[in-house]
Image 1 (cartoon, protein in one colour):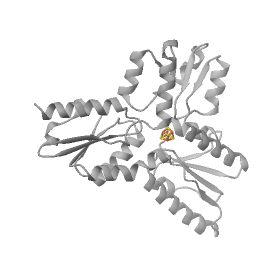
Image 2: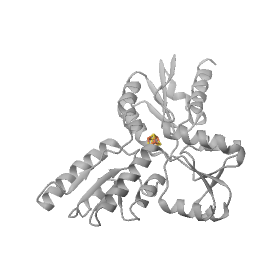
Image 3: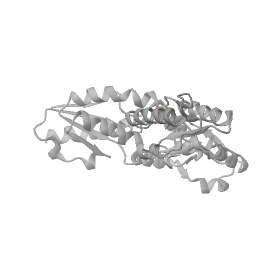
Image 4: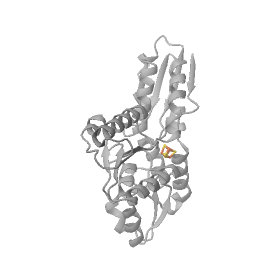
Amino acid sequence: MRVEIDKYAGFCFGVTNAIKEAEAYVSEGIYCLGEIVHNAKEEERLIQLGMKTAGHQDLTNLTGKKLLIRAHGEPPETYLKASDAGIDIIDATCPVVLRLQKRIKEKSEENNENQIVIYGKKGHAEVNGLVGQTGGKAIVISNMAEAESLDISKPTFLFSQTTSNYSEYEEIAEYLKKKSADVNGKDDLFTVYQTICPSVKNRIPRLREFCSEHDVIIFVSDYNSSNGKMLFGVCKEANTNSYFITGPEDLNPEWLNSCSSVGISGATSTPLWLMENVKAWIINLLTK
Ligand code: SF4
């Protein structure tokens, strides 16, 4: 039996950087604003090391403390509040997210008429940070039905959360482009930006290939992870024997009956150590 971990799975560079920053300051009692990564087991590991988690409501009580801004980034008002409270910010916003924030801010400020639309998950930390660049004016859409109800009579600029579903974004962009041309009688009032992170997008064809090389796929992630949900959908399409787990305790031995190869993959928020634990659990089961 072959058991293989997908070499492209696991933390992206943005998450790796945020975790390194947390580990570097853990002895100084660093706080992280929100869950450092959408993976409860990695969060737990860092809490065991001494990291604490804070919410926006706690900012006024953290004077003099170190506060980590995670890879998802934050809206400008968070920086203002932290600065007013005398907090020492360790900013681990991913450079890809920072670039996207900057582009959205520029487009929003360029002309008051500009309508900024963000395709992403409402309430997600990254999306909140992006909407914050427009002073709260950006419209967030999460699916085609919401795209269909958009008023597209103004100059409209479409952006995506970095970890969104690529194929749905393409469909929505195509639909809005056509709708804008129909409604406005010209096709230059709608602009789409390709802002899905390459770290996520490039994994899709590689993951499809990996899934086709194994009889069974075990996908390790967390129910809170947007890219985990999306990448697991890719697994299911490529290999119907794909199973989603959060850790070894979710594994059902029956899934492995009469298979000769198992592939283990995960999201950009899945730690390698967790996939290795899953691999060890499977090998242990097979050698019993
Ligand atoms: S998925 Fe991309 S944008 Fe998001 S943290 Fe990772 S590298 Fe940065």
